[in-house]
Amino acid sequence: MAQTAWRVRRVIGAATLIAICSCDDGVRVDVCPRGHLAALAASLEGGELELMLHDEAGAELARQPLGRSGKTFSSDAWDRTESIEVVGRDATGTTRASGASSITGDVACVCLSRLEDAAAACANVSCVATGDACSFFDAAGTALPACRLEAATQGSYRDLVLSAHPLIYYRLEETSGTVALDAAGANNGNYHGTINLGRSGALVGETSSALEVTAIDSGVTMPPMQPWSSDFTAELWFQRVEEPATDNVILIREQHMVRGFRFGFGTNGVLRFWCTESGCTSSDIIGLTPLAVGTWHHVALWRQGSEIRIYLDGEQEAAGTAGYIAQLASDQASWGSSQGRPSQGRFDELAVYLRALSPGEIAAHYEAGASGMTLVCR
Image (cartoon, rainbow, N blue to C red):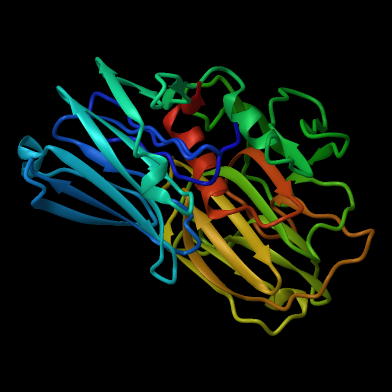
């Protein structure tokens, strides 16, 4: 049962966690306590989700555009709600997903489909709610796959990353030595400079360690390879440890004033991609949100064609074009401080992919690490 790129979010302050699962057969599950109804954003080809509540006569009580970023929807109309409708439209306005719910007690169970005949796919699906769990059945009474968020087990985040087939994946679990083991294969990295291993890691619900870098020209060097001249995604968990006095680098692949790029943050703590010190004339690509000191953030640098995007905590922060000069086969990239530029922070779960991950994949990686929950389909 394959999953497509629907996002997972928690309902903050609610006792019950929710999930919508996207499966090849078109079945999703939404479990919510009364008073907190939520839908999760899809990477619906640039489209939008919209949620509607109806009374027993079919009159609309409330409507909420959910956009693409995911929102929790609470409404006084919930106490009068008899039915729920969720509609997803693509960038052209064509309905690509729709579904309706059954409500038992305090639980709403929603069936959605992204099939061409969206409404028909859920027409004969029934739901039985027990406590805060939903079970779905087809017209013949056969159980259908149900998905929900459950507490992550050790290694859940690792498994999620590996399922996306990274080129390299440094978990930074070492407590000594100079080798950063590659969990994805044979591209081990090398610790260099003055570093601190064994710091507490980023992942909620898992025991992991992290790398702290505060010294100049220190961090993890990757072996020579060529992901940067075509499509790629580089992601990690990063925590600032102090206010920066100058620009900091997180990832740098550069021969100064000749080729390459830098990715890090400015003195205001906002993420930034630039290559002017690498011989290019492209404008800097700058995010919006400062990285909070002492807080773990999921960060991703994304490239497809000439477009560069910056993602922070599962959301796109900035986008632009960059014409940096491709590297030589012998060039290396480094996580941490390089070229005399500082990198005051902690690093965890470093991964590089030979493709531009979908927005849904990036969001799912953030949610899995930040929530301590994993999406389980049975």
